Amino acid sequence: MEALGIVFTEIGDDFVRATMPVDARTHQPYGLLHGGASVLLAETLGSSAGNLCVDEAHMCVGIEINANHLAGVREGTVTGTARPLHVGRSTQVWEIRIEDDRGRLACVSRLTLAVVARRG
Image 1 (cartoon, helix red, strand yellow):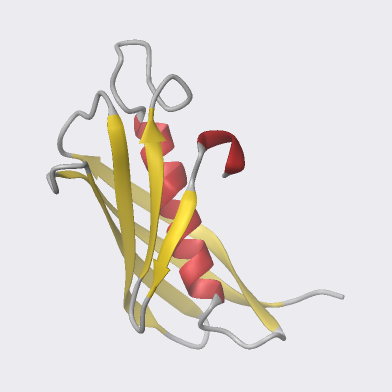
Image 2 (image 1 turned 135 degrees about the vertical axis):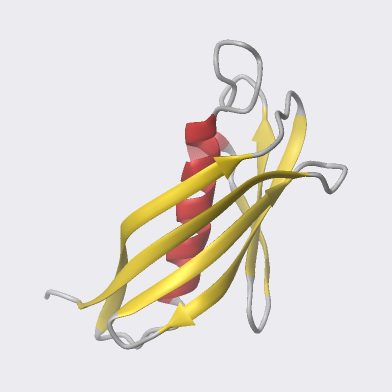
């Protein structure tokens, strides 16, 4: 996260938000935000949010993620917001929306987490 400049900016009752710069660290060869960087931001947000919803005896781990890249971003900052679709005892599903500086939707992702017992 630190290597890509991801910064958590806000935690609300039903969301977690973070930003990531669009620069040489997150560009693909054609100068656009790399889809993998968007997915990394999405999984970081969803996994972090999920872990805020479980007790200390459990943890959340990603088991599936998908992403639709809807608009190219060349510069500035993107902001991701994770919101729960389902928070259960054994699984969680989170939607993560990533927008550019103008509020344009650049990527939408859905992350499925497994809730597992922490191993000591």
